[in-house]
Image (tube, rainbow, N blue to C red; front, top):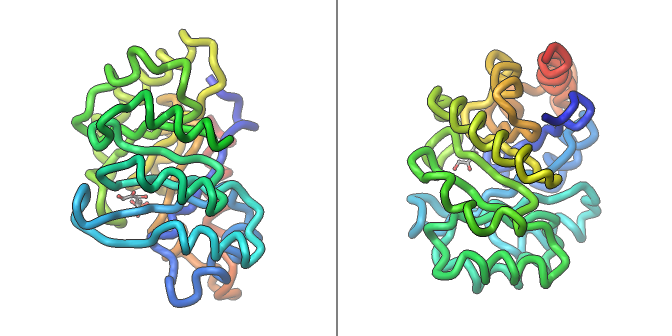
Length: 231
Ligand SMILES: O=C(CO)[C@@H](O)[C@H](O)COP(=O)(O)O
């Protein structure tokens, strides 16, 4: 299992103010976040419509140098992979049931020099990993059904995290185990104990600006890290 030093916090910009997205990303990174979690929704695979590669590229041009973790909630998958590679994504993750050829999609991502991951909805079995474990750099478990921020963490995800952690440990590979949905100060330690090392949090962070500095999120990020330090 990852040591506490390996824990990473990835604010989901789905909950940021899109009218001032560049500043929001600057603010949350300056406040101590590690990774920008970039939710791509297509109103087809999931019932919501968000942002695409042009916005990812705009964040890079704005000066964002932190890793950008592009979570593709889209179907089909492959036609967007090249665009996100060109736009500067650091990780590209996709849902295996949305890809015609999972192995090929992973290969396309790696061919672009980008880290690749698979995303599992609450009811999607981890068996999709069976023949591609050597080709994933990240496993993302959804602890809500994808499409919207602000939902409650599905408790059954804790057992799935334990199973995913066992698979990663057995593989001996350096694979991040990311959790997404309903992550808050109150439950992040329990989620970390179940095996996660990378924590996506949207509403918990972007609805918790510092009381005295409206453009900072240090307070909530410190609270999340304090909880992780107790694990
Ligand atoms: O991908 C998704 C939802 O589909 C997530 O990234 C949410 O944006 C997380 O939001 P919170 O549950 O943390 O508010």
